[in-house]
Each structure stands twice: as structure tokens, then as C-alpha cells.
Length: 193
Image (cartoon, rainbow, N blue to C red; front, side):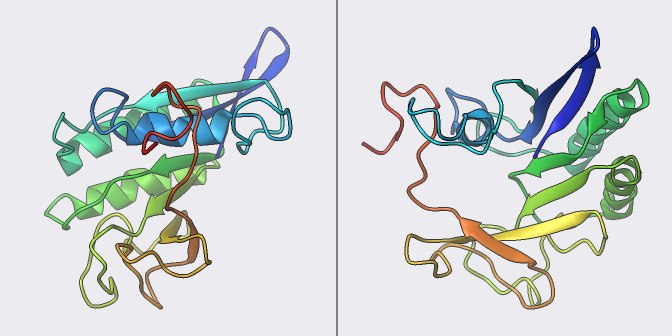
């Protein structure tokens, strides 16, 4: 999940992360810590980064309680689109949010596809209600788009996490989603300790 940006002839890797920042639920910061932490450097956690050349574009549209509007999500995607139009090569967007569809669903799909056509996949959470999203629609996980990967959460035994949404048609893959270490600053790498 990266953004590539050319600056002074050097390619910098970065990340677009939607979620709450440290000091609220910390989920956005936790995800960014996983994505940007170097792998195999024997320091802290082993993240997904293969380079120390990571840059994160953190976009926040949720309030302190974790609520936000689809219009605000659309505005955040428009910001990404503008960055792409100015030369930032965004290849993926992490979307750790979701909810019920509303009258702005078509506009959200349109802007996700605008960003997608410029080269970015949107990796979206399937949700945390433990429901089948083939029967109970949630957005953006159930938006039908070639530019969306809907991800359920799995546990340490590679089984569906008890809280995770699932669906044969609307969920593409499961990824580890419980007891995940991060470089987020809670005086240790795991905030539950």
C-alpha cells in the first residue's frame, strides 16, 4: 500500500491511510506503523516496508468518536486525485472505515474509480459487525469496482476473526486482523500490553 512520489530525482515511497489518529482510537496510526515499518531490520516490529524510503499521506475525515460522512470521504479521495494529478503516483489507499450506503454512494464509487484509473487500488475493510455483507450491504466494501479489494480480518489460526464481516461475493480476501503489533507509540509495540 504505497504512494510513489518523485522529488529531486529520488523516488520516495509513501502511504495513504484513512483512519483515526493516535490519541483517538489510534487505528490509523496503528495501520501506518505496520505499513511503514521496515521488514527484517531487527528493530521493533517487522512491517511491510522493504525500504526506509517510506512517506505516509494521512487523511482524516472521521471525528473523535469514529464517525464521519460519505461526503467527507469523497473530499479525501478528491485530495488524493488532486495529488495524483500533480504527479504523485498513488498505487493504493488503505480504507479502515465503512458504514451504511447513502445517497452519495454513486459519487463515492465515482471518485474511487477516478483515483483507480490513475493507478491506485482501494484496500477497504469489510467491516467489524460479524455479518455476511452479501446479505447486509456496507460501504465502501460492497461497492462493485475493479479498483476495490475488500478485506476481512483473520486471527492467529488463519480463521475468520469473530468480529469480521464476510461474504462470498463482496469480500475478496482475509488478512491478519487480531493482535497485530505496530510501531505506534504506546510505550511499547502492542497497545494491548
